[in-house]
Image (cartoon, rainbow, N blue to C red):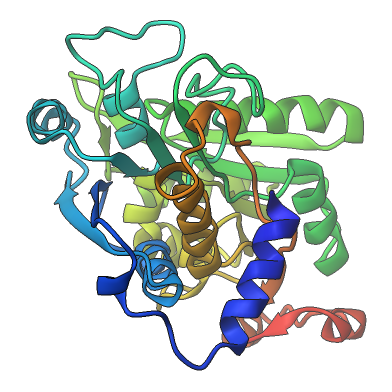
Amino acid sequence: MRRVFLQQLAAVALATTAAPMSAQGPRFRIYAITWRGKTQVEKGLEDYFGKQGIPVEFIWRDAEQQPAKLAEFVAEIKSVRPDLVYTWGTPPTLGVAGPHDAVDPKKHVTDIPMLFALVAAPIAAKVAPSLTNRTRDITGVTHVAALDAQMEAIRTYRPFKRLGVLYNAAERNSVATAEGLRQLATTQRFQIIEQTFDRSADGKAQPTNIGEKVEAMKRAGADWLYLGPDTYLFSQIDQVASAAMEQRLPTFSATEAALGLKAPVLAGLVSSYYTIGQFAGYKAEQILVKKQRARDIAIESLSRYSFIVRMDVAKQLDILPPVSLFNYATIR
């Protein structure tokens, strides 16, 4: 599936014009849910349909990082009956589809194909029991490189003995990432220094004491601060990265978006959000046009990742990348 997508993507890139949408048959309706507004993922998704000449009507809804809104969206989905439901990120995907082992037909969408993007750990988060074998019609695109590959990338830039991690303990994918790092630390013999975001009485993450948490990790000997695929962490990335810069603590991101902002994030091994969106579009095409069942379409990641280094941040930290990195890293 991934190889066919890459071949088709190359062919589309060479095409000078797209087929007229009006000549391509019925218009498909996609109910699309974002978590904090549209991103380059959705840009890639929309562009894919345009370049392929597939007529699509999007019904856009943004949860604004408010889980309560997802119940409203589920009710609307059941009313309008779109051809496909698209979700960005783990919270909206779980809120709409439900964990695979605790689906409630009254609370979740169960009879309309679903497609997700930017779910870091679909199995650990219980979006699906397997990447290939599923009993409900849901598929999608993941975006995070394997943890061991990320750790190797960090070492290539600068070796470490202790890795700082700040995450939202109320987010399933974030907890799964932290657990994966603990397991990897045991086999690779490094230490994890963990901090979690403060939480309110109702369990929601709070932006308090971030500076103190970063300082505590630095004081405990952290050599790097790892910025995992955590939606709440991203919403606080300016504060987190600035606190790390104040502590002279280099930061490494698992997601592209953190490296495209003004926040002083040093480096990351990431996949292109735009290309993820195009890959999601390709999978949607298989469902809408080719009439494949979503459950028969593998959940996949992109085959290539980019090692990105922010040179302005490297200079501020006085931690320039080794010369060898210039041979394959993207220097910004």
